[in-house]
Amino acid sequence: MAKDTFVEQIADIETDFPRWYTDVVVKTKLVDYGPVKGTMVIRPYGYAIWENIQKELDARFKAHGIENAYFPLLIPMSFMTKEAEHVEGFAPEVAVVTHAGGEKLAEPLCIRPTSETIIGSMYSKWIQSYRDLPVLMNQWANVMRWEKTTRPFLRTSEFLWQEGHTVHASEAEAVDMTLKMLAVYEEFAKNCLAMPVLTGRKTEKEKFAGAVATYGMEAMMHDGKSLQAGTSHYLGQNFAKAFDIKFLDKDGTQKYGYTTSFGVSTRLIGAIIMTHGDARGLILPPVVAPVQVVIVPIASKKPGVVEACRELKNTLTKAGVRVVLDESENSPGWKFNEWEMKGVPVRIELGPRDLEAGKMVTVRRDTHEKAEAELSSAAETVKALLATVQTDMYDRAKARMDSRIVRANSLDELLAGVDNANFVRAGWCGCRECEDKVKEFAQATARVMDDENTSETCIVCGKKADHTVVFARAY
Image (cartoon, rainbow, N blue to C red; front, top):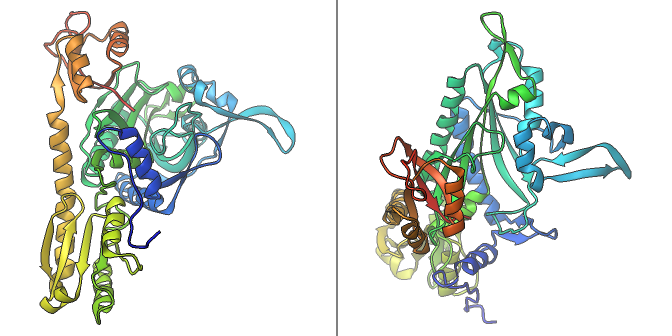
């Protein structure tokens, strides 16, 4: 195959979105499939995105006084059974270790599907007095949930995430923490992922197993489906009572703590891909892009071109820009296509004519807009351009989402709404049977509850609605 031919092809994003997604994640070398069904290997380019996500979120957690720790992967089965609703919710997904060292274990061990139980057991040892509160911890870890239908990043048997777990002396403090972390996620999604989200409380059916209340953030993907991009849970005293997390309060009485948990995962990478991608492949937000700028020499064999490109790379690197200089033997056209597919936010073209004029050519990945800029002010120009790309990506995604949120007053209108790739706002009485009816009729689920004390009527039964709910088809 000739070196100037770019051979990577991806499916059409409009006619075969699932295939487009699979093509993009594999051909841009974000992931490969693991040898065990349902697992993925996160390749360096994909892992670099996760590292940038970690860096940004970790700084936000620490700003709220949250410390990182690590807890064991293996959890005694008896721990999982202490909180009845929790074990019932996770039972179908739990992988269990029954043998080790050639012998059957006295007690089976669960491979961590989530860590409320094992962390709760440790908190019960560490917390004695109100002076020990609040406890604010987070861990970056892997978890395993035995999924039947998998897709890289979106749903795999093993994935990476962070899970925060806090304990408080009062319900008010715990609820405040739950909502505070939801706000952290929402701000992070906007300013780092350029991804608009809807936030709100989940219905009882959709909440986390064992929680008093779950709050989620939902993002709209290119095909109009919703992706749950993060959750924050108020756990009340459910796990505190199950694991005896008590403290001696100021009044001299023993009280149970109030706990929370919150998490996002490598699913966010899938969210970025499906929110921003286009017919040419990835479009990565500059804040989390592994490579923010690629420099492509034009007529590289001409004297001084490569040297000037190397000098430009050094200038940008010193300015804190993540930059790559493509000195491969492939043609400029091949390089353009390859780096476009990989989603690099800005491309710089530099050739003999540009050098003569003291110029460089910048090309935005999100709009394909070309512009000339002075080489002498390259660092300032590029940093400003990256900031503009970041903001514009969010604004476009927000405008698209807003234009595709519709209202429905009947099940037929709701069905038409989701069939046309929209989120649908509708009244709901709070009855589980009506929620199930929506799923049965339109294959849509309640994503978040918008507000309370609505004047609307239930879309199913016609009774006064307790909530306005955003319904959508979801991943």
